Image (cartoon, helix red, strand yellow):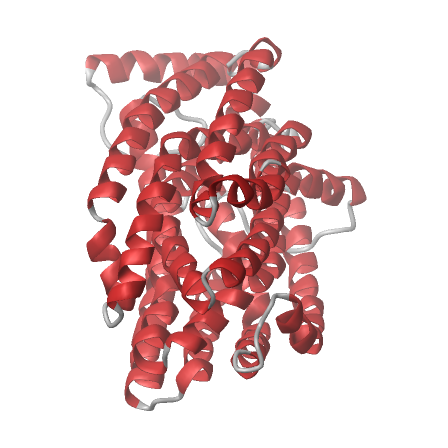
Amino acid sequence: MIRNQQQRITKEYNLQKTGRVKKQRIQLSDHFNRRRMLRFTFPSIIMMIFTSIYGMVDGYFVSNYVGAVPFASLNLVMPFIMVLSAVGFMFGTGGTALVSMTLGMQNRKKANEIFSLLTYILVVCGIVLGVIGAVVAPYMARLLGATDEMIPYSVLYIRVNMIGIPFFMIQNYFQSFLITAEKPKLGLVVTVMAGCTNMVLDLLFVGVFRWGLGGAAAATIISQAVGGLIPMIYFFLPNGSLLRLGKTHMDGNAVWKTCTNGASEFLSACASSIIGMLYNLQLMKYFGADGVAAYGVIMYVNFIFVGIYFGYTMGIAPVVGYHYGAQNTKELQGLFRNTIQMLLITSIALTVLSESTALPLVRIFIGYDAGLIRLTVYAFRIYSIAFLFRGFNIFGSGFFTALNNGKVSAFLSVLRSLVLQLPAIYLLPAFFGADGLWSVVILTDGICFIITVLMLMKYRKVYHY
């Protein structure tokens, strides 16, 4: 069967070279040239960018309609919320790698059983974590460094968001699986619907009704419900995709494999959140609430640019996993080579773009405070240099996840997001003062880039990419 599949891909490859292939729905089993790679991953890239944009909407309305202290409070507790939501990313990326490989091995029944099992487990996890998060909200706000003035806002934002955390987790989960199901455009449509819901409700709840920070949080959880429930209904109903939710049975090995495969994304999100917490503590020490607000703005803009890298990696991962499972080494080599070339061009372009658009982007959030604008623009232009390396690092970790090598993927993610940054947050300011805080990511992403290249070279003969 694998031989027949490889012959079909070779035939399609020759037809593509002669230009005699008509546009049709792209399948994981197809031959992927550069153009087809971009076509298939484009919806997931736009999806992640749009997710980043509508995630910024809360910050925009809170900053401009509620005030600087609630805005700083929101940013202070956001890392905690992201830690909990990272379970969805873990099940999504890890499960996608396993299910894609299983589909590549031509075992669709087992792939659907694994998909269904992971979905049901994740829903239960979301409910449990939501309850725990609501209970520990006051303690977590204090732990994160909230002042007496910030505590009420921080606790309110956490507790309202905990209502929506199960939806947020399954939304993140289905973003990956809609690509595996060969429905990336549906994933984009769902994300746009959820984003528009959040934007409209933020305008209504915060801008018109003046419900403050609680209104912004309510708008977020309603949009998360839209983003999570629509894909779940789609997969429960008869559909034309490769995947469908249905009967399953407990498979501890599949759950363990999913968690180890997705450990890199989970640990990366957790590590990023922990680092974000420590950043905020250091920023409060050196700059006060203005430093936290400036860092929050940088993170919002950063999410847009990084969303491009995450969207591409999310989109191409099921393709890599499928062809790895099908033992199509020629396809793996083409996917890897074309990706590296595109990342080189994109990394330079995004770095130049971020440097040149820093001022107008910052003004969107804090146009009312000239001093805060100067601080944020200055910090962001230092921070943006890291975009030269970040795309390669994100892809490197995601690539090993797709190859079902969770250990290397986790190593690269935790190295970049925690191990290197943790000492740098304290050492660089000690030597270079407050400016050292904005340079942490340049140092850590640069070192991780070198190690990622070494890992890719080391395992090239193992996976034949």
